[in-house]
Amino acid sequence: MRMLHTMIRVGDLDRSIAFYTEVLEMNLIRKVDYPGGRFTNAFVGYGLESDTTVMELTHNWDTATYDLGNGYGHVAIGVSDAGAACERVKLRGGRVTREAGPMKHGSTVIAFVEDPDGYKIELIEKS
Figure 1 (tube, rainbow, N blue to C red):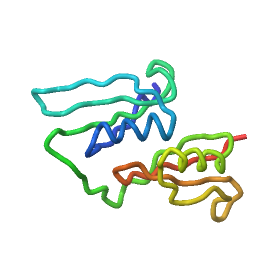
Figure 2 (figure 1 turned 90 degrees about the vertical axis):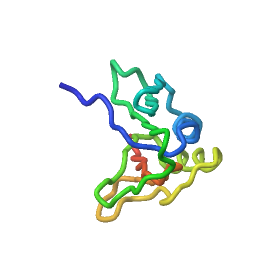
Figure 3 (figure 1 turned 45 degrees about the horizontal axis):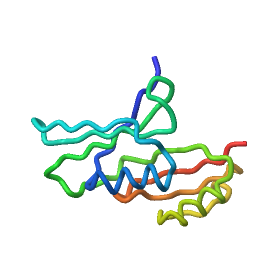
Figure 4 (figure 1 turned 135 degrees about the vertical axis):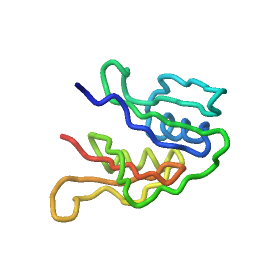
């Protein structure tokens, strides 16, 4: 067994695809419309679905916004340099909500950015 993808619902699919591909440098793997169900799925990630876990962005055509709730945490992405990753995010118009630095009660360097729908993405510096 292996994890295939995680899904989040987004209010504006084009805006979300632009964020994940242009700001976080993921690839758009595939995008499929389901007219009968009035929704579109787009899959983004850093590799092929056959090799790596990806994200499914689901846009329900009749819903512009969602309540994120208080149970969901974040998606984590490994980066070689969290500070440099934050600078790239800012240069591309993304929002950094916590600059790179050691995590509280630990030494791992982390940062947080936010996607257009308010979902948190943690950048974890990996050596």
